[in-house]
Length: 401
Image 1 (cartoon, rainbow, N blue to C red):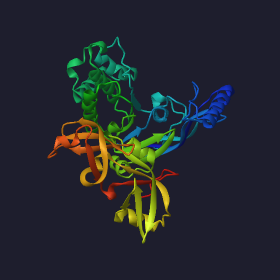
Image 2: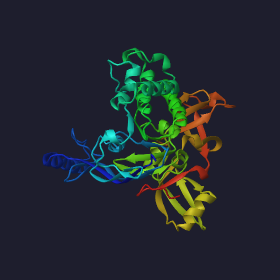
Image 3: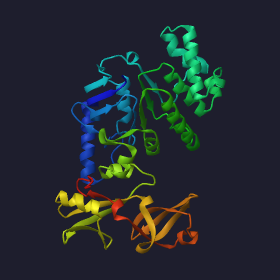
């Protein structure tokens, strides 16, 4: 079994008393003066008497052979979590189970885990074959078995023809394939990947994403993948774990996270282009039905929203309303703004529309579209389906639906 269970995992990096006092003073000064933080101040991490809390009470069950993606902005704790699973970081508190075995104090080499790093970490003086065979030689595996496993992995990754080359003679994509090959040749219970595609160009990243998807279908193991790129998260993961400041914000399938974000942060982080937000939107009730008012336009919510709000006896409050760019439609009646940026993407055009000071991004299909109507400086009238709106409590920032 290669399931992984994390129970209330916490990671604290010790710092000196002087650093604690300095960070707390900076935080108070920033709050009082709204001044930029001084150098070295870490605003997104909780500072305690024990030190900097990098991961906060992280609990997650990862199923056998599941592909889990940890995603979030830099500094959110995702790589630290991965390194704790690998045994490269000590767990401050909580329990880590690999299969049914409590693994907090098991040495990294004994966890039957392979890790693929961002910088490839290949031995420069060894050939591709020798890089892939190295861990098997350390395990004192018979020569014939090593040769068989290396060549099988090379065939799977389509790198058979470069087995005799040194890393310096390889492209970035080839090096990453070798790094993955070195991981899978051991047939580990779990493969951990820490932003493995971040050093590649956009085209090669797309190709390598496809390679990883194909690889996953060929080998039966559990993957835990870390990235700050939400496109990678959406295309690769069976489930996505969205993190922020050491906390889990939401766990779900890509569609669940996209279609029903639990809070404003998740809604803003997942989706390209980024979701549009309307702030200070009143949620009101009239004749038993709920309405929102965006820039003077009263919009009656659809049956799905009405049902949930009525069941929860939702009081009238101030909200934040989110609408994704792909859900904005060109219309003869609705909101009227001025096109400030028009980006032609082939099958669609991305518009930045100035709506009374708000920058609204719309993705409009170009099929049967008069391109003159979406030119820079033109007025643009648009609307959106109320059933596709995301409505958040302005105070808690949690989704009301």
